[in-house]
Amino acid sequence: MTLLEHLKAYTDTLLPMHMPGGKRRFASDLPYQWDVTEVEGTDDLHDPEGILLEMNRRAAALWGAESSFVTVNGSTGGLLAAVRATGEGEILMGRNCHKSVYNAVTLCRRKAHYLLPHEGEILPAEVEEALEKHENITTLLITSPTYEGVISDIAAIGEICHAHGVTLIVDEAHGAHLGFSFGESAVKMGADIVVQSLHKTLPALTQTAVVHCKKSFAPAMARELAVFESSSPSYILMASADECFAFLGSEAGKNAMEEYKNNLLAVRKKLKNNLKHFRLMESPRYDIGKLVILTEGTNLSGKALADALREDYKIETEMALPHSLTAMTSVCDTEKELNAFADAVLALDKQANPAPICRMPSLSLPEQVHAPWEVRNAESTLCPLEQAVGKLSLAYLWAYPPGIPLLVPGERVEESLPQAVKYYEAAGIPLHGMQDGCLEIL
Image (cartoon, rainbow, N blue to C red; front, side, top):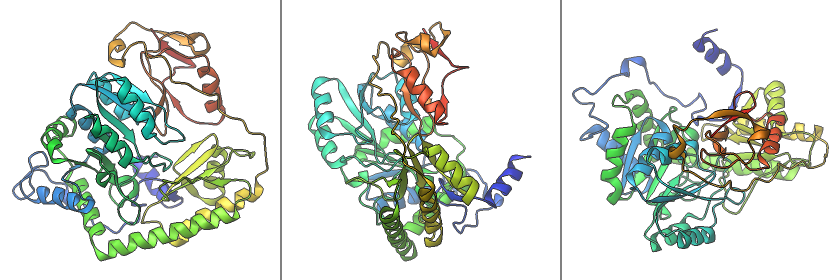
């Protein structure tokens, strides 16, 4: 079967409760005949003076940014550029940052300090403590909202950063819809640079993203985006981004976003009032567009729930972890489809039974002996994970999705890691970085 044949078969069968936000139904007329290059009238993304400059200005006006740049290699390219654009000083980052941030830190050879999130949230008090402890930190980079929708207090964190002369970058890849009937974006909450994936939660094609920044960072961002982004950007992708901006700025788009929010609130209420065994994840600062079902204390893992939804109800979800399931919604999900998901979860909830809670072994922050780039070309050997305890890893060990590392090159393997790996594997969670149960060590 070819990829095209598989895509045709897949799109005819499953209800997408996952990315991208267009949900395969956003009305668009983007054809092959529009796949052009930089010719008269189409402008140049890396030196925009005409139609693409206006596209960037439309994005800035929508989110209230001082400067904005559309990109066509996702938030990954934006984050790589942002880390490089903010200099060479030490960087403070959430341990739950995406793998692209770790790659950026390695490429730019910046010394990293980590903040452990509390149920996904980065706490302002711990930012303050870290900045007072490490005086050479010049940049803070955090993820908000997280894959599961947890939002940190960006306003408070921004005030702390700026009091210390530190630049705040927010990876808002999963929050491009914020500000459109859904709370406020980090753009208006004090962040200096905000990176958003349009395609994750808005109707735009995969790989479309936008970077917003203060004017003082605009020259550096333009320079670094030209480094990390293709010199042949897709005009179809850029047209998709601009079409998304037109939708968000229109009365029809505003009404659609408000209707989407109301449908979500109704479905969340329905789940919250009727779930007996599962729970709906919520917190004071939370993106309601993420429907996260917690299965802890039941006989079903997140993976088992995802499999049942796929096999019995033809619903494909975004991410399954040992005790949770994440469904990604967007303005393109209708009331009928949101209720179909809720009804399926409620039906499976009735089939669930209480079970002892089996928690993942607690993982502390590993000892950082070397920076990742310092061991990049070091001689290595493969070692069974159980025998690697106490040794220095030369590999990343990722739980993917969401792409958050359990182990970073140059860190010492802690005693609880083998147990955590067994726990993830037993729950069917993909782990990247090992070879036949062996870890690459110094």
